[in-house]
Image (cartoon, rainbow, N blue to C red; front, side, top):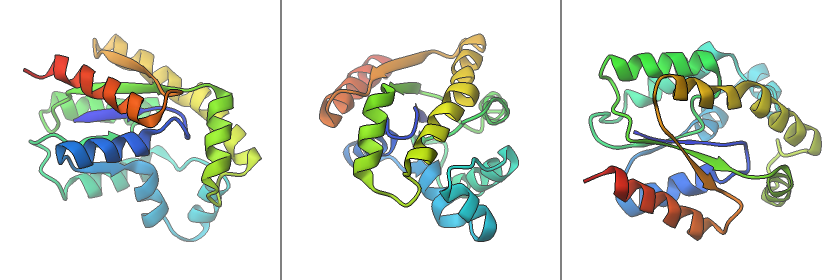
Length: 180
């Protein structure tokens, strides 16, 4: 399992697609899955930038991951996003359900993120929603990087402000050093 972490707009989905296309790995984008599978009032709240509960996200992820062969490599984009989700995932790794190859933290400045998300033009990419996602990322998600480190899990920081192909090349170079 290759995990891509970063704030919305850091390029997780683009890099996930690149890895899936180049290496033939299944790609699970939590954001895409949630936008497809969450409906009703929760969907409206989500589109306004509100995060779903840990239980909702874990349930969706757990349901979808059962559809792929997790004994082989796959790309996970945007999960985990909280300490509780991280603890659940680490437990699944310890239980042998998943093999962790690498965690890539796609690092991008607030200016880069705003520019990318404004160009993307999705319904949930309003100025207020972008600011809320960035604040939530800093307050809730960034601490999971330290949580992984406490578990002796290495985080590889990648400069996500580079052009997408350059970011992809950095990821591939790092993967080559991790895999014999």
